[in-house]
Length: 162
Ligand SMILES: [Zn+2]
Image (cartoon, rainbow, N blue to C red; front, side, top):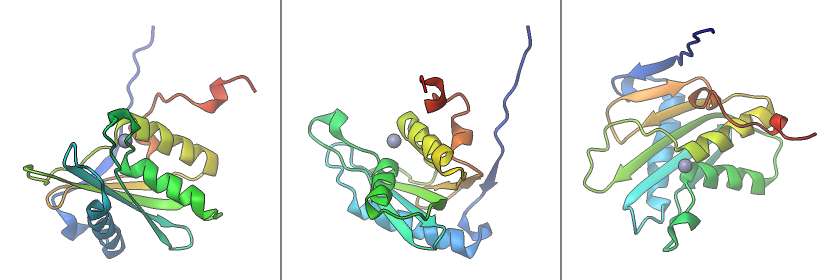
C-alpha cells in the first residue's frame, strides 16, 4: 500500500494591489459582470471574465431559473459564450468574482464541482491550462496555475470507450 499526497500550489495575495495590472483589469471585468447575473432566488451574483490568446475578453454571469436545476453558473455561461463565438483563440486566464446580498464579499469564491469538471475538460481539449483568479469585491485574491488543479481526480473522456 502506498500513501500518496497531492499538493495544490496557489498564490494568495492579501488584496489586489500585489497582482499584475492586467490581472487586476480582468478581475474588474469579472466584478462588473456580476451586474449581468439573473439571480432572483439566491441573490448571489457571480461574474466571470476570461482573456483569450488574441487578447479579447469574454464574460459570463450566473443565470438562475424558478426550476432551480435549470440554472447555470457564470463559468459555464462564459464557456458556452466562447463556443458560440466560434474562435480558435483559447483562454489564458479567467477571473471569477461575486456579490452576495448581505455577505462581506471579501473572500475568494471557488467554482462548484460541475464547473471544475467543465473547465478541466476545456483545458484538456485545448491542450492549454489557464490561470484562475478568484476574489470577492475586496480582500484576498487567489491565483491558481490551472483550473484542473482544483479537480485532480476528475472524470475524463479518455475513460470512455474510444
Ligand atoms: Zn458552477
